[in-house]
Length: 233
Ligand code: 6PG
Image 1 (tube, rainbow, N blue to C red):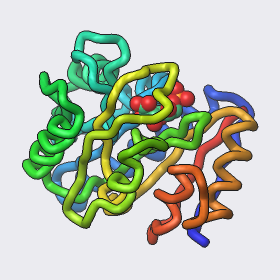
Image 2: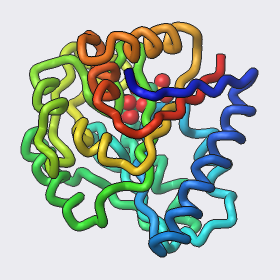
Image 3: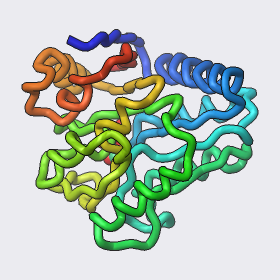
Image 4: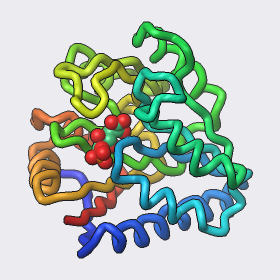
């Protein structure tokens, strides 16, 4: 089984303070070691209070490149766009925010284009920070016709387009996502989740490993690095 450690907090605020501190440290360490940092951030609602704290950290943001770990195929002006919240938070402090999608409607082509964009960045990321949906998806690795490709894309294939089936109600659109091999190539993987239901789901998925029916179980099953999972009720 993989090495996963749960960090429990009493409140969301406490979790946000701790996670922002940890990510600040990961970025600082990357800057010390390599003079630059590349991090992939999640979408959804959980990250917002953490972004708000992290952005206040005294970091040389100009040396930090930020990508969304997955993106919904909507214009950047759409509230559902993951890079929109990242850009609104981190552009003002000078970080280099790189969207992974553009105007391509065909989701498979959008995935190819994202993969090509990522080739311009210095891989691997110092951090891939993941969330998890109630259905056990992570990044945008969802159940559906593209699950197999997202999980089994060869090393070096960092992004693909996916059509979730069923479509998730919070954003029922096609996605572009980091592949499992891209996620697992990260120097650090960190997960944030909230609520007992997600915790039970994630614990079960980790225990089931490769045989998990949930995308996140399948993604994490091959992780070689220890994974920190931060949880608040
Ligand atoms: C997305 C995500 C996704 C997210 C989870 C959890 O674009 O949908 O990146 O993987 O992290 O759905 O979202 P919440 O934090 O809103 O529950």
